[in-house]
Length: 147
Image 1 (cartoon, rainbow, N blue to C red):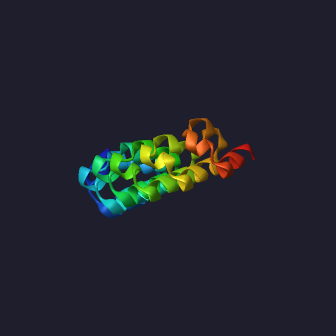
Image 2 (cartoon, rainbow, N blue to C red; image 1 turned 90 degrees about the vertical axis):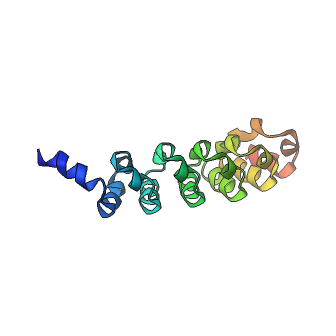
Image 3 (tube, rainbow, N blue to C red; image 1 turned 45 degrees about the horizontal axis):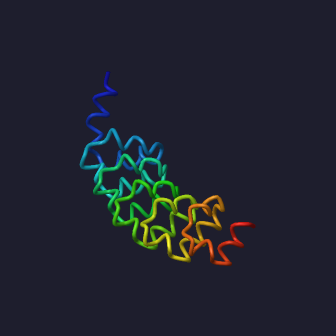
């Protein structure tokens, strides 16, 4: 009977939060709102399991550092990143280096960025059919896709 009370009290404690999200990122969902918006706690949770990213408050999904941490660990999390960050080249590169198919979620303008596309194809050649005609016509990209 003391356990539920302890958890209710501790869900406001940052040190407790940092420890529990190290073991299970999804503990973040049980913490007080102020801790769900605490960048240190959120980053620790994302490091433990990037799949917590879609459950973060928008303010945290819009934070560049948090987004970079998530997509560099799991490129498919790019689909949950705040739209303006999807247009940032370094965010797109981090995502496609982890998952080439993340290219489907980068900003349209970056789908024509040769380096972003090449990294995506290097990571997963199955993204090739989704490339622009200009990117498909690039000899190096095409050669990478058929390796």
